[in-house]
Length: 117
Image (cartoon, rainbow, N blue to C red; front, side, top):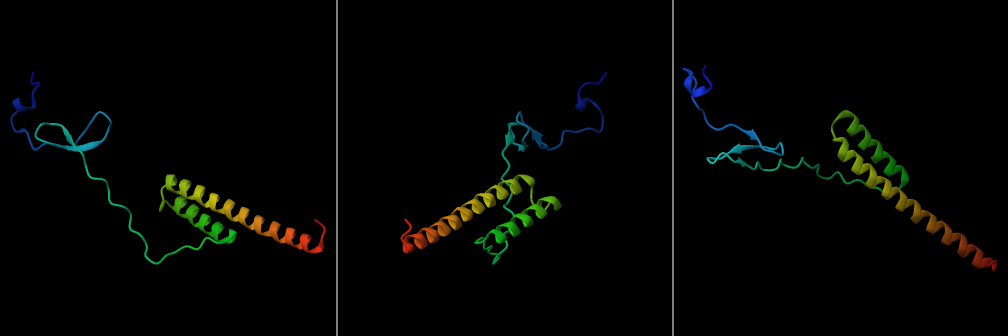
C-alpha cells in the first residue's frame, strides 16, 4: 500500500500552498512552513463631496433609512449598519435634548419677563 504521495508516479511536490493556521487564518507558507501574515484588505472607496447634513430629526431619519436600505440590499454589512444606526440614534437624542433645552430656556425667559417666577 502506498502512503506517501511521492511514491506514486506522476505526482510531484509543487510550491507551497495557502494553509490555515490554528486560529483559522489563511496565509502563504514561507520556506520554513510557517504561515506568512497576509496584508489587510484595502478600505472601501469613499465618495467625494457627499457631505451629509444631520442637523434635524428628519435629516437623521433619512440617513437612518438610507443605512437600512443599504444593509437590506447588501451594500453595507449588517455589523456596520448596526454601528451607524447606533451613532445616528445618539445624534438624534443629542439633537432632541438640545431642542428641549432651547425651548425650556425660551419658556423660562417668557415667564421671567412676566414676573411669574
